[in-house]
Image 1 (spheres, rainbow, N blue to C red):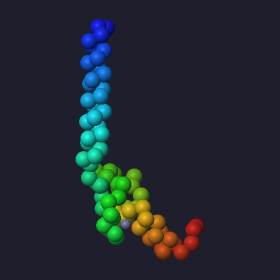
Image 2 (cartoon, rainbow, N blue to C red):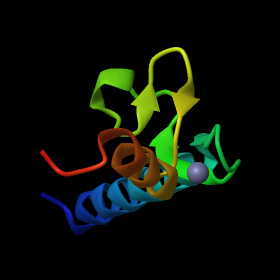
Image 3 (cartoon, rainbow, N blue to C red):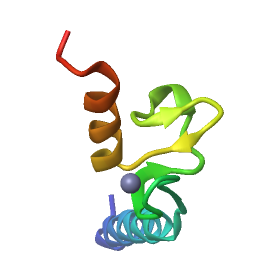
Image 4 (tube, rainbow, N blue to C red):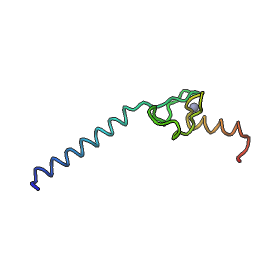
Length: 77
Ligand SMILES: [Zn+2]
């Protein structure tokens, strides 16, 4: 392999990595339906893999989801 080729490969990798980071930053996140705060859940993420998503209600942030769980159950089961 020529030294030039090696450098090109490195550049390509770096470019891909930068694009990935850019895309991550541009992703839209769900907002909590209770407090309006931005959650860690991406809008394009499958609902079944999310925590805090309630069918028919929407996405809750971590704090609201925890609070809701405690209020609803009253105790840990
Ligand atoms: Zn919230």
